[in-house]
Every structure is written in structure tokens, then in C-alpha cells.
Length: 87
Length: 180
Image (cartoon, rainbow over all chains, first blue to last red; front, top):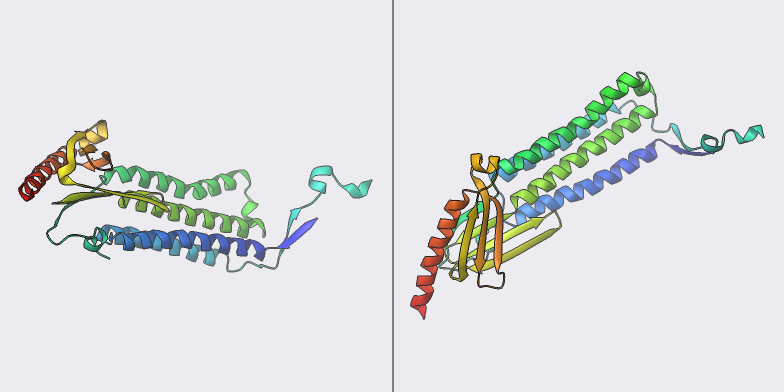
């Protein structure tokens, strides 16, 4: 049986967030390096940033009461072979 | 950085036009991403119908929120990548040359340029229902330079652009003939 605390999933989420942020910053840097800073690019960047902030705020407000120490069973041999203790 | 330093503009050079893809061609991407954003809402609704108590589970609830959040953020970032890909495909036309920049995804870009006097042939094409309604299409430029053919897809008013390029090429040919 493999049990991990729930906060491990939160760390995985932060890892994904870091990777997505890097992609976002690469996109913004392209706008700067190719001289494409315009009203259109500003508006789209603003909308994307606002959507990301809104999603993160929603996630934070929905998970405020979560107990991150809860154990999560991610593997149990009995899922595949039945209850071995009965033999 | 401004456009002048990006293309290393010469003293006598002036930017005549910056050509991008028609905004309508990005509209399809917007619709697609709106549908993608609606997927977690649809799944939540479906889950509520099939397993009404699933979201009351103290483990499943935070995991589903984290998964939905990661999914939505990925969709937002990929939308931005598509916008960058769309917006950075551009043709910068000056009175001396044209610079074709093509962004392929977030991590690849091709920049090619050709002197206008090397233009041999320009073809414009409008195809399809939306192309005819919104007047966008393809322009192919045949040159005698290192890059023999430039193809610019989905540009606004391709016939006008063809005429502009031919006029500018004619002017540039006269200028270069006068220099010899």
C-alpha cells in the first residue's frame, strides 16, 4: 500500500504552474524582442494575465478549507489481486 | 526595441507597411479555446449527474479543483502561444526590401529578407468562402535572391499587396539602375 499526503499534489501543481509561467514569459519576451508591442498585443496579454489571475484566485478560494495533511492512497495491491490477507 | 532597430533600418529606408494575417483567421482559434475552457464545466455537470456525492469527497474535491485549475491555466497559456505564433508572422515592407518573419510555435522563428529589386513575380490568391467575404488570401513572391520564394498566408487584401509590392519593386529597380 502506498500512501502520500495530499500536499504532494499541491507541489506538483506548483511545478506545473512554474512551467506554464516560463512559457508565458517566453511569449512576452518575444513581443519585446521582435518590436511587436502594440495595443493589440497589450490587450491580449492583459486578458491572458487576467484569466490566469482569476483562475488562481478561484483555486485559492475553493481550496481554503482543505486539510493538506490528509493521506491519499495511490496504490494498493488489493485493487488488482483481491485481499491477500485472506489467504 | 522598435521596428527600426529590429530590421536594422538603413538611413534612406522607410517602413511602408507591416502585413499580418487577417484577424478573422484568429477568430477560429478563439472559438476553439472558448470550447476548451468550457470542458471542466461540462465535466463537472456530467459528474454531478452521474455521481451526485463525488464532490463531497474530502480527497476527490481538492484533487479535481487542482486538476481543473492546471487544465485551465494550460489552456490560457497555449492560447497565448497561439496568439504569439499568429501575431509574429509578419511581413515588413520598406522602400528597399521586405523582411518576412515567421514564428513557429514559441521556440522557433525564421526571418528571411529580400531586396525589392530582386522580385521577379508576385501572385495573389483569394480562395474559399471566408476568404472571399473577408478579403484575405495568399501572396507568393518569387525572387532572384537566396530565398527564391516567399509565401505569405491569410493576408488582408492580397491583390492590393501584390500591386504595392510590384510598384515598390519597380521603383527600387529604377533606383538601382540609376546607381549603375
